[in-house]
Amino acid sequence: MASVDFPVQFAGEKYDLKKFLKDHPGGVNTLEKYKGKSIVQAMKMYGHSYSAYHILSDFKIESGSEANLTGGVSENGRIITKAEADRDAEEIAFLEELESRLDWSKPLLSQLHKIAPDYQKWMNSAVYRKCRLFSNPILESMTFTPWYFVPLFWIPIIVYLGVSQYIEHVLCKEYCTEHSLTKLQFLQHIATGLVIWTLLEYSLHRWVFHYDPGSSIKLIQAHFLIHGMHHKVPFDGLRQVFPPIPALLIASIIYVPVHILLSYPLIKMTGGLIGYLIYDMIHYYVHHGSPNDGTYLYEMKRYHSNHHFINHDKAYGISCKIWDYVFKTIVKVKKLGFALRW
Image 1 (tube, helix red, strand yellow):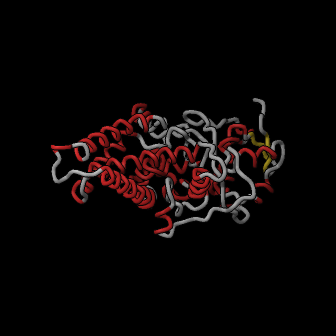
Image 2 (cartoon, helix red, strand yellow):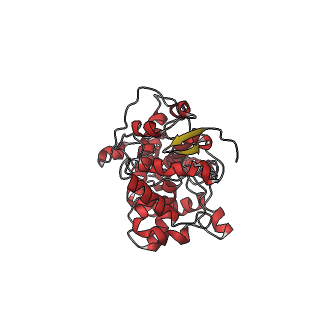
Image 3 (tube, one colour):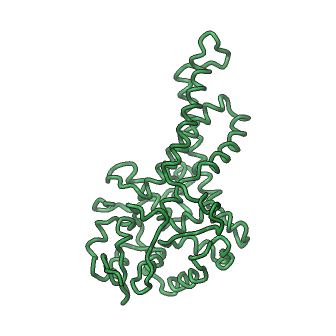
């Protein structure tokens, strides 16, 4: 048996949390003092969710298996933010039984019918494992997206649209038409596009990504591809930003009503794409970054953690909370007397 680098005990079983240290939702500094000790009381005291008890099994020493995320273990984690009642042993046992219905060494997409009646419960019970979706290696490779692919793909498009529209509507000089703009007006249209994106971000997350697929296997599979996978394997660093090609197709569809309904649609679309890029980078960072206490990103990291591990039906804002306030899905994150360190 390999050496145990960060042993802990829970209910008579032994676990090695080495690979989970920097992904631990409560930060490294809250976990490191329990090395070699029982974590039973700590898990109750800090109000861990059912998902936390469920994910613990992935680090059980006796199982002989190791957590191995595609692309490696991310360097940072999230914070569970809401104390809960004592865990229900029967509920934890049910989650384990539910998980045992699937063979994680095989593609999951074709196995989802086995947990269909309890898909929502299963999907929101996170694990720390590899996740394969397709047996076809080409299709499978299309589900992986390193975070830096997103800015590499979108920044040239944003720059091209922004510069070309600025030249056409602001620097047109004697070629200006009735559609010419001042610099301030141009920036106002960019800002309008940004605001529209924040509403779209909230709407997509709440009403598309979190739609209830019911018992339909096809809808369950579609939901798992779109967003369910992210809740099931939230520590996988290669599946936390949106693949550029599908994103481009969606952007093209969204542009149709923008073009029909709004003035200067390409300028507003440029602002919307800037908003999207900021959103996707913030989303990746709140999962894997190390923001300092007191910063905006520290606040959003804890807020997004609450959505993942406690309030799955609230806290839909990722880059901002404004629409959570408007639609009354805001969550107040518990204040701590110390700063978390990831």
